[in-house]
Image (cartoon, rainbow, N blue to C red; front, side, top):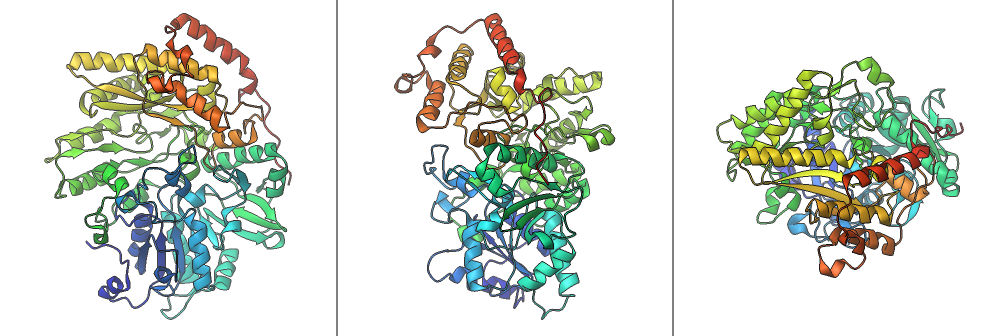
Length: 639
């Protein structure tokens, strides 16, 4: 196996004198299925096309990194990084993070802020007539009007700030394959000497609109015209004038990311120009998911990084991703906007092939760091009756309760764990991804599902915890948890009791590590004080905590910006100033003398379960006006 070329010399070694696609990446080039640039590069290579990756080009000076490989036949592509560039660089307090996890030695000077804008501007300056296509999570989350926390303002579709010609959003294999096929077959007809121009590009995709893309068009040139089933969102100008309009837009954006039969979204972005968001592809089949993971990755950083540490790679080098998608629907999470809520699982054979590759790695010592996914225990889960799923608009299959149509069978996952552990060379496989304990504790009507959940819980705790099990209750107060779309904290307490009991029975001394969040919309100081009291009573000294960071395209971010819940348009409190956010965050650290000044209430004895349940009952009663199921839906935006 060899890496995809990154220089002219590497291209020449393959006998290539010109390229079909050149991909510019904001991350270091790690040839691994967890790194988006590698996945897209290998996907294009598998089509028989010539692809090179330019990782972390120097955007200063004479732009030689952007010019060194010349002009591609089809297009330039930009992958800004596996993590949003602004989240990757800054904390919730807008301070520089300690390191860039996707750069060699964690350096901060290897990529600009917003590579989608910076790289595209340079490419258009150097090659004005070559199409530029944006992909990755940075573009996905900015495909329509969005709130930018770091500039504290609403910004329009990313194509309004970047001179690129198209956004491809979501997971990129299908859209990349179709885009390249259309350019190669419909436009260039396979002719080696032919080249695609921007004019050719726009004419082609006006005639053949491509799913899972965003393009800008004057109103009278929208492909196919405005159709009856199009959803016309409030314009960007409307959103600037009225925060509730922006919040109302988000409900449609989220729903169309998670329904089985999505509609096209249109939004005017200024001067009669519309952003046209074509609906996403159907859920990938198991064969398609397997094909992506089975591409010939070296699973290693490019040799140019020899002797350098890439922090993100060190975390995942001995881990295996079992599935994509997440039906948790957490209000602060971007997974559904990028991957969707439907689970796309790999086959057992594909998973075992990857594990065997890891076993052959020279520095592998027999321990897999993770057999997981966006959530650890959703592998192979889906709706029993697809007709019901086809009509469903719920963003979550497990909130406010587990859907009775969900086949939440843990047996396929248990089979994977046991098959992996039986392989020669595997000493232990750990679960590093977050576990949804609400799926484990649900009272399933089917006794087989109940037993499978119990068996999974025991198997997980006894055989797959590396001393510390990560779970994410996020908060203790019912009102805040309801806004977050998370289960009641009483469920976490039940799970902790089971965890402790199984550890005692097995003679193990393991810890459960809960993750919590402060400053989330609808969270008040008194909620944080209660969280401090309750977690103190459980003997937790919290360290795995975070201050809520508004990132584009989540329910929580739109509520934080607009001051109203996007589904109900009911007002909600948000801790916004640095002082308010710091005060809430300090409640986590009652046990540190230097941070306990603002959390004196946490020193009170833990309130009784009866009084807490009474208080949560009052909270639940008081917040019924914001219950999605009982509140009027926001009006459909004007056509």
